[in-house]
Amino acid sequence: MRRKRVGSALFLAVMLVMLYLPVAVVVLYSFNANTSRFTFAFTGFSTQYYQGLLHDTKGLVSALMTSLELAAYSCGLSLVIGTLGALGLAGAQMRGKGAVETLSLLPVMIPEIILGFALMAVFTFAGVKNDMVKLVIAHVTFCVPYIYLVVKARLTGMDPSLNEAARDLGAGPVRAFFSVTLPLILPGVLSGTLLAFAMSLDDFVISFFVSDTTVTLPLKIYSSVKTGVSLQVNALCSVMLATVAIAVALSKLLSRKKEPGEMKNEE
Image 1 (cartoon, rainbow, N blue to C red):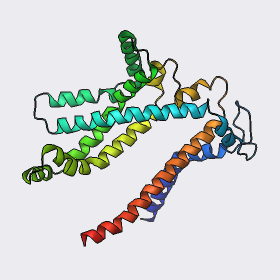
Image 2 (image 1 turned 60 degrees about the horizontal axis):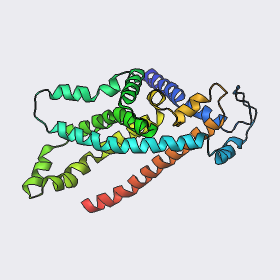
Image 3 (image 1 turned 30 degrees about the vertical axis):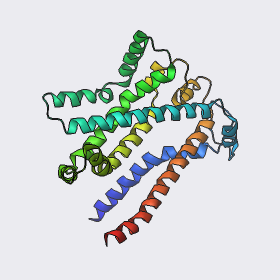
Image 4 (image 1 turned 90 degrees about the horizontal axis):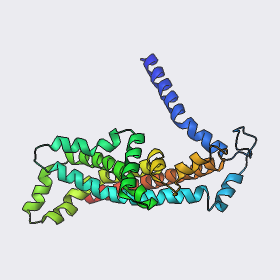
């Protein structure tokens, strides 16, 4: 029994190191005093790269703003399309339903390099010139399946009699959806949207094929490799990690404050 516990603890420790050591290295090197683009030797502590971000309005920060804007547009459209698709297919009784579901998942099953090349060919053939339009359509293509999958799983575990009860009590289809169905699937919708947002923010391959002049954060970092990656990238990543950590902590805090109120209402 003791050996089993030691083995479990050792396995957990190895997994935690593998997961969080790269994050710790990124944060550590964001305070590096080294100014060379071609070496990662740690020469001392400095906040120069954080100060540089404040004045880098046309570099990494600008690319980050472009990526955030693109992710917001893409996830907004994907949320609507993916949720409506999951609701429609969940309640549909038709032949070929399985084939339709499989086709809807193809964008995440096809290798990104093939999907990116195919989208580039389509946009060239259609004569689409606007970079942001091309990027939004491309990102929606692979973001929709993520939201669809999560919402579909949520709908599978939902009791259909709840919606039927609302209809029996006089609620119309729209009111039944907003009063019963939407609150029940909302956690799945939010989870799928956050997953799609992360995938859009992280995408490089498809954006590389589709974009002509618009530079997202992954494209900016890739283009800087030939001239040496600035350690400002580490500072920017650390700021993003801190933002995510604060958001998660606040959500946990709000959920804990909400639980006593809910328990009091139930009593």
